[in-house]
Length: 178
Image (cartoon, rainbow, N blue to C red; front, side, top):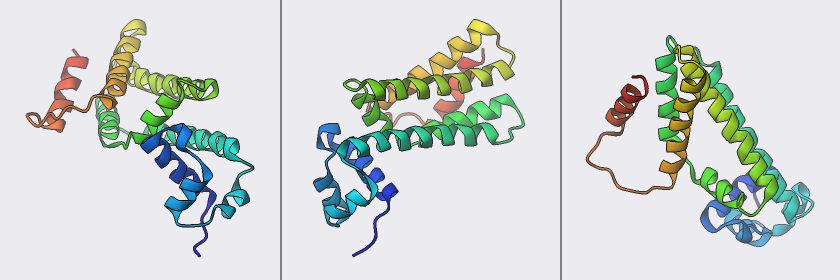
């Protein structure tokens, strides 16, 4: 039988969270999905609550890592950095983000984690607008517009075949930078 790492368990749990919700994130279905016995679970976690806690920590750390990678990338202009942020958002698999946000409705510690990530993302976006010369309220308003629209877009599943996503990205940037 293949050895399954702690990270394998956490990712499988996050996938199950995204598919069915937190009430279904239990040892047995995860073990079935991983095609292993549930005994290996206890080599990595004390109990189901510990798994939930570690899922949240894993997700949050991944979000900080992604943002730090974007921040560390050298860009020739702030506009290029904004475009890179938009492209990252367009390509990002948001299933876990959506599931974590839904989970946060019923769990205070999850809500606190979401708030930390939301603030970090907003701060990064505002820093890009600051580099472009926007001051105080204008950089915050633009960052909120970008971030809030992206979060909303994660929950809207309209088929928009009429528009090329890259063309729309460029148009959104033009509007934001006016």
